[in-house]
Image 1 (tube, rainbow, N blue to C red):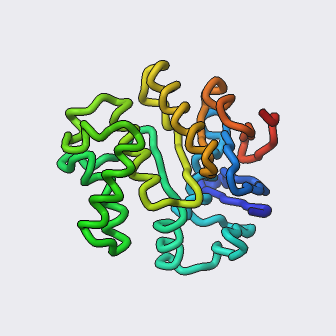
Image 2 (image 1 turned 90 degrees about the horizontal axis):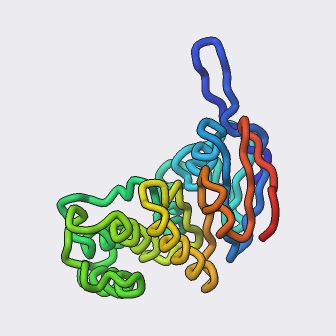
Image 3 (image 1 turned 90 degrees about the vertical axis):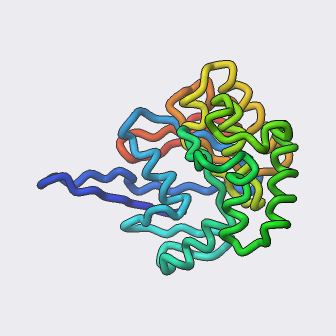
Length: 221
């Protein structure tokens, strides 16, 4: 991405939540973006995930510029190339763990039978085989987040975006979730994590810091 700008208007004031941000993410990268509340990091993540559009600048995915694409085309790219993990899990409460992981596959038009096999395999990988028929209220916070990770990964996305993925978890469970991300990255998964917690950020391979809409490299790990 190059020279991205995203502005919000509050009364007579204009705020650049993302202010001339340029960033290159390589395949297999593991990047943490840190910064205080209001620094613009979640707005940047929404642009990266094609959930929002920049007002200025270019965003290239797989050598294709995506900024000017239609909403439908962006949604198609988002569904096939990007997986999301959020602090609040966003699991469907009436569905089992298996059914929650199947949802993005069914949206792609994959048959229910094939989706069930793929979801089961992913839950097995994340050590949730014995919880696949449980609904979220029957799962611990860490188990719910692992289901959310399984849902993000089941479609084999090129990029996983995680917004405060340990924010709702205790410290020990947060470390467990970060261990999972590190193992996934060791196998080649590209991951970007948004966090305000430097101890979490240090588990990534690169740390970028964001303040007043501007991004800068902190260090290589």
